[in-house]
Image (cartoon, rainbow, N blue to C red; front, side, top):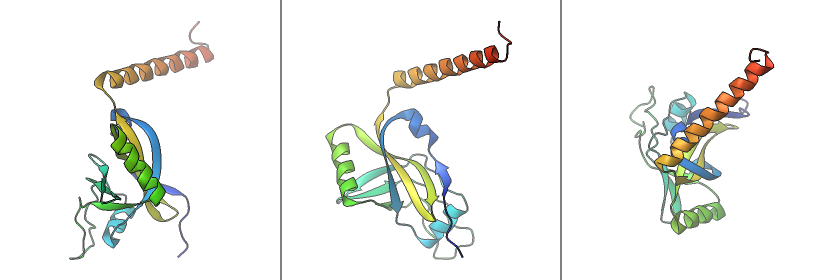
Length: 159
């Protein structure tokens, strides 16, 4: 069977971009079992409440939900188990240093297949305050209204 090409998104964490200011992103592999990969290929996963954390010089993904594979037997996986992230040592050390130095957290943004390999996009993020979120929403609404007005003007409706 030929290897699949391109990028197929399985799950994305839309709430992360709302709750956090994204500073930097990294692509990491995941140490998965066979039934987890099959469940991901079926398009089933959730990143709600997921986060990455350092333990013994390694990075682990906590709280990601991959439901049990329906055709799995007694070899099925635990849905919310902790999964090891696969990154280069330099990237791991950089991420650990930045999270320790001040107020930053590691949040998964997307789980996807890249050329057949399961990957997760990890973001180095800083938590937003509630007034920052309101400002972002107000800015987005204002930009949307400007785009609407420009569209009406372009069609000759608003003279």
